[in-house]
Image (cartoon, rainbow, N blue to C red):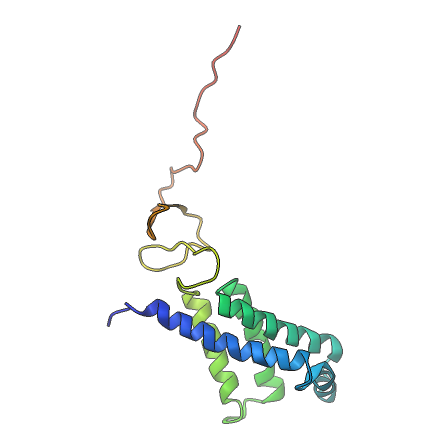
Length: 173
């Protein structure tokens, strides 16, 4: 199977998942259900600090949706949104399928984005990657990219140094 369109698939996954979170976060920040409605729902479930967590959930969903759409901070964003979805599945939906189907699907999308990364169609600086597609975002390899090319050269050798500290200084008398 060819992965020729992998980055288009990741873009579609990011856009659809991001739009859902953006819209739901916006609804919580405005009047559908709004912060007051979220606070009341959390208080009814005996959730600690319901107003605080209503704001946390609303802002996480709204800003997280923007980050997913842009392809920014994917690992952090997917972890935070994943926590929101797990709490929703456990405390609100109580794992009752089919009512929890959208939550399960969103959690699956977040796991996929966490493990696969944002793809190459992102807003801002393009992340470097290895020949196998693995992101260099969390890698300590030295990456040198040609300004004219989308390819990057990697040096994983243990004796590679980013700066040459072996030069000598002439003593002046």
